[in-house]
Image 1 (cartoon, rainbow, N blue to C red):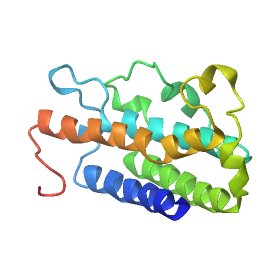
Image 2: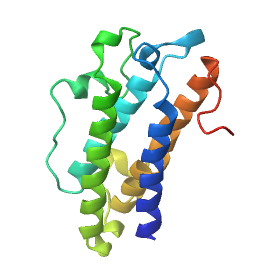
Image 3: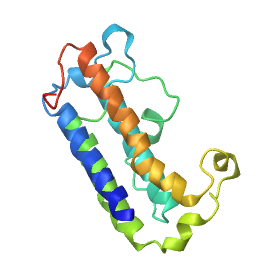
Image 4: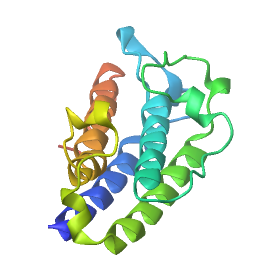
Length: 163
């Protein structure tokens, strides 16, 4: 099963790259028709979530300074492009997080996936360590990538995949 999860995590990374490959710097922070979560924020938020996953897996945070505040859950994305790292920086950080998380998750003893989630408040949504890991590697990422796909439509760009 773990191979399926790590495959999908890699699939998500490729999909993220596809969704933004043709975007200009200005488009990365555009907010068309009230769509607030632009690609720069959505991808940066996935970097933060992947860093949180890394910490859950026992790794040290390696986020660039200021990224936690810029891309935090519940934050209000700004249309000011100067407030965000470049597309290349964000994608590079996401790729780095993915690489280290796949390596770490493959080293985890399988019995740990059944352990209760270490945070009692989070446990009501994700009862086990494994539930949270699988969510962060699959559903959470695809949720935000879906937002970018919808953002593309709002921008009049159409599908990034040609479908």
